[in-house]
Length: 399
Length: 198
Image (cartoon, rainbow over the protein chains, first blue to last red):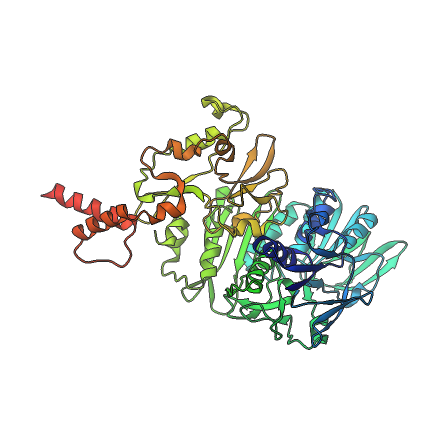
């Protein structure tokens, strides 16, 4: 069986490893458009100089001698009738099963035309460019996880950082207001100049520096601007091949696209969200790895259906550690919080009617996994939230 | 596959396993290791269940392991024929993803002897295993709540379970749906209470 994997980040790598582990007699081709296999989540640590350039590698290319590995090449076309894919140099590779793990590209708002000073942070080549450009000051646009983590990296390097956040508090997409305010307080403590309810209107170049104009006509001069406004899935390849796409490539519970020999995993695949109960893309590392594992099992003929994902993330900094999972705000969602003010800790659960839909943990990560998995079950009903918050979570495994 | 099997209904919560675990993983392997500069921390936790019974909670070395999948630096890896999940403290960057993914809540964050903060969990005493010894918590357990045995063999040994089931049926007339260790223990405690009141 000829298996072709396009993209070798979290999803592709996990799929490849599982295939190699369980099956010996398959012919695998893996194609990546970069020349090394590294972890994208570690780029902010690289910028903060907590890790060196070698530390972010998660696999060595030389380890995969038993497969046909093609690096530094893009895939330009999928020919579904001939069952081949075309590389950018015109070479055709035939497949029996094709796995698309092409990931997502960062969103580039209209003001990112200026190329010398404005960057997104998704690939290693971008991090290297930022490293070259960076001297004393930087502007981070966007208050999501990428924005906050890179701001933390710059804080560690003692680079003066300004954060521009559109919403009234950081982490507004995933967290509720109370959690967002905690993060805001910590960011201000780190001497990061936080500009809330503000937006970038224009970025121009001035004497080698970038001039950022905000909505209230404030002008900030800085060495580099980093834009972290979310990602959009790479669906061009699949769309041109005639596969069903909406926001991402639509997949069924076996992670198959509308063509049963083509699978899609990771940030580009629009799978099922357990809490939202609809199609949704949770573009995070653990989900991509999990999907890669399930996809490999399906290809090997085990037929295991993917149960769906929830959004979750962990934010660890010098003086706080925040874990959020699931939905923390929305229609009919009520939150209950247990604060330990003297320890600067809280536990928060979000309930929709009596169904557990979200959790947030500040500074006590130990039991977070139990709660996250209770959400993943999708049918955890809680009648007494106060009691639930105070008991040890292990007892909720009905033992 | 040999692994540590837990019989929670036998646990008395004496915490001997915790002490021996910390000792086995300490730098000096000496009883006074608590006075080391950075004390060794136990990797097994005794938690209370709903009925306030002690429950030894430790890493199950799942396959596939959610912590291994969620590790963004690949500091978590499998060793010993993929049977044991280990953490490489030098690679760990403390991002907290593994604690978020672990369904059993067994991952903590502690300082390691070489002054590096890292994720911290059971390693099935891999060094003791290579020396032909049992894991420290198992040899410490006096009530056989922790057993080191082949899991498939242990689960197929149904004789003891059948006897326990019969005893349970004798105590309780009405048969409940799932007869597990704790239900048995509860019923046993209840009957003891009844006898003492006579």
